[in-house]
Length: 93
Image (cartoon, rainbow, N blue to C red; front, side, top):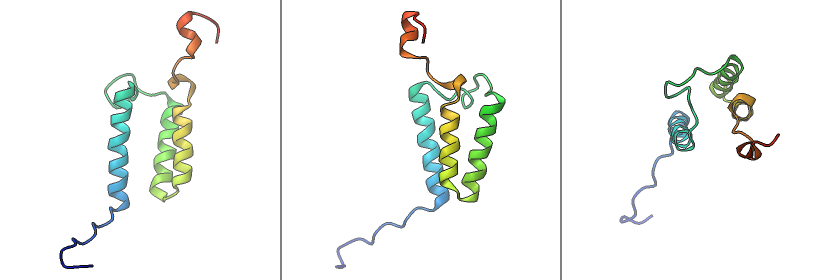
């Protein structure tokens, strides 16, 4: 490197990456109108809380693949999915 070139930035720590990801997830949820458990809405059901706890345990253990799997289960939980596209017409789904 030449004297005029600034040194490369330091890589973020896993904790910093987790914090950034959580902040981004909150912004996305707010934009999409999701995340009632974060903004004082109805409390999440027991199964949803279970998936959240399992996701956090997997994340703390460093098993990010399992954490992603639990996140998918949380998002696909029937009480938290968006209504079917045909529901707006009153048709059976």
